[in-house]
Image (tube, rainbow, N blue to C red):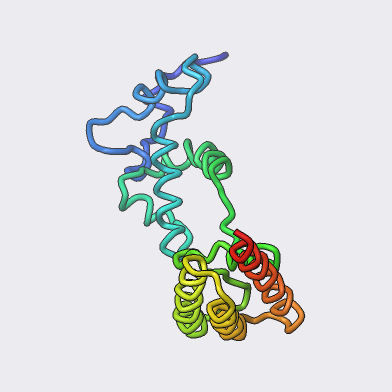
Length: 198
């Protein structure tokens, strides 16, 4: 009743798109590296596929089958390794969140430190305003350096004047700018008094 036919009689030919590269035996090459075969690690071809997907996504487009085939992946490889490649991408995904900018306490710290290369920045600061603010920040830092070398009242007032000009360039409320100014002025006043009593 039951007749057995040879595999060559019943099996349909493999489409060229699934056959892979000429002379390459897809199934034999993958058996050794299969996660269930005992290696336990990630499949190197799945890692390559994940890298290709990330690279194509970085160009602003979604990856199509054609894009991946141009990069050397057969349809069989895509079908076999796409789930693992998606897992690799999910594990390595890092959301790039734009910094919200410095808050008033951080601006105060940077203003007191007055390092020219560490300018306080706030959210909403556009590029043009940032360039103008950078110049004013450098002037303030120079005035602070002069004040640190020779702490006297005129130097202190000059530094505070540059700080006010700089803070006007930042999108800050007036009360926030005043908090920064008062904190720096108090620090400078304490420095002047320490210098006078030495």
